[in-house]
Image (cartoon, rainbow, N blue to C red; front, side, top):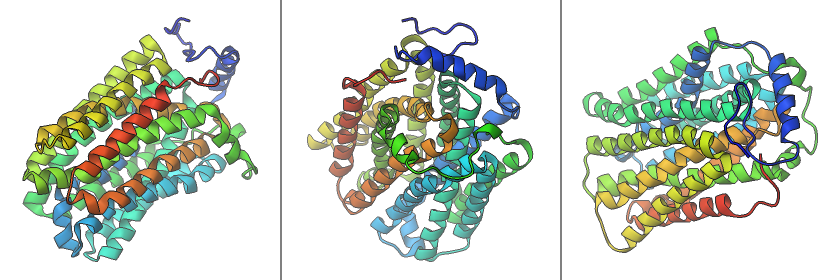
Length: 425
């Protein structure tokens, strides 16, 4: 089957007998969809909304060990400020999914972005560990609303092939945010302290809120709104083979990436003596690799199709995760033994993220918000739980982080390569 689409056509990602019918249905629904913001404004809004996650995560990573002294916390407690944000990000998607389908994307966006801004301002005004955790939970809930709404907006406006391209392009720009975040965070921390780092996160949230408030209209077609949740719909989404496949791939890849973010500051700064600015450069380098992965993703999807692209990406995540595990087990306590395998892993992760997040809601046009939300819950909560369980050991050894990434690489490869019971879209 040819993988190159004709002008204006949607790629058929699998030989399913109903694919042509779905293409025709998508074309008709696209014609009936409401007008939205200009492509440039919409892409800017998507980048800002999705960029809340790396901004809230990356910007203060170089200062994470110093956060212990600021809050009077242990190393494990400081790491928990990451875990609670990811956990609330996961649970928050469950909370925001149904409102996004019932009342629309824009109200959810405005509520979530306002919550993120208020929580960010709260972080600046407290040195109490409990209140700090509460504000991080608020940030996670706000990030969840932005993630659910923007993915649902893309489902409202674009067919699957176009969504993969647009999400991949958005993640390319997110790579720029992630690239600048660690050096900016390290510079702000060294020259102006923790408050300046937290103020930068709040400013980013304010910019996203203002853009949505004044430039972004509702994208959910009125015909797709429903008065209430129908019993059994969650179960139907969970049972769908395509949903389980893409959610599993994205989740297994993301967990390994998250564990590196959670444990690498202790591995590189505390145990190997790397300075915060040098560690920021490591994270920036990882962001450049992530950007390269998003560019390659767009090329591979056009040439190979979705499933073959994911199979190639799984080889990269497997090689990175197992490579780090082998090097740590061999006793190579050096920065390159951690950084080099992570670059391989994150290259593949960028591809899984772009394809998987675009595909999870393909079969649920009327419940795109709920499908995206449910996928996000199944992605974020296991990552937060894994980070929480490994928090204490991360301070003293590299093997738990490396072995966990190896297991995530194995899980990703198994899902990508195993025979499917039926063709997936």
